[in-house]
Image (cartoon, rainbow, N blue to C red; front, side, top):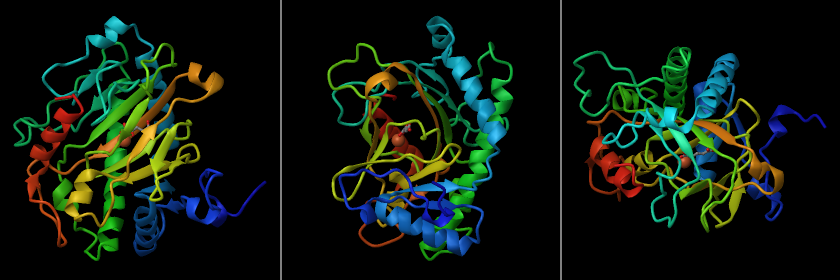
Length: 319
Ligand SMILES: O=C(O)CCC(=O)C(=O)O
Ligand SMILES: [Fe+2]
């Protein structure tokens, strides 16, 4: 049944009162103050928002999606040739069974590829942000993923402008903190579930380390957020929409005023368990030398984004 736009909401669990279980859809292409109010309200309640009208070209998304599937379909040995040790998985391929959520007993059921920011030669951040690597087997992979990276980067900045307004700051408040930032585009494949170790799920409960995350592909079932009442709420945006969430770095900067919400990707039931799941999160990061100093009372000690990142990557066994 067709419903008016303003009435459309994400799938909700039937175990809780309807009104408290709705993740509203927010359009990015509306005046910034309106966007700020709606995003802020959704972040306040869930730490997540579903964002439509984000301006990332659907043809670009489809191209990237197709190339990601082609990459993960390559033989294991070919993919492993793009695994770089000593870089905390920051670029190229990370095989199945490596990343393990903080505090989890078993590894996640996923493999992924990371694309970072291309910096000019001799850039001061080059020590922390290594050059990208690209798969020789797929010539279009590089230009398409570079385009998608820049599209996410642009969209992320608009979302940050709205968050700045919501926090009572000027819309350019975050500009300097993310200039040449260490953002990472993750192309993510959860293979069909075969003999998984006891207790293993596609992505165990975790919080994102970075500033904000913009996620494409979450229409494929499985993503859930931990609501304030302690129950798991499915996040299922319509195809092409973004799921956006607050990460730990923004939580720390705002002294907890914006919450980094725990989320996970559960194994599907029935036949869906025998199919792959793909998604594309963009982890928007501050620049490495940005000092995360709480903007409000009651926060933790200041720390640079780079130091904080390294601390956290060790916890998830990537560093
Ligand atoms: O695949 C998803 O839908 C979410 C992935 C995620 O939470 C992550 O990689 O941090
Ligand atoms: Fe995540």
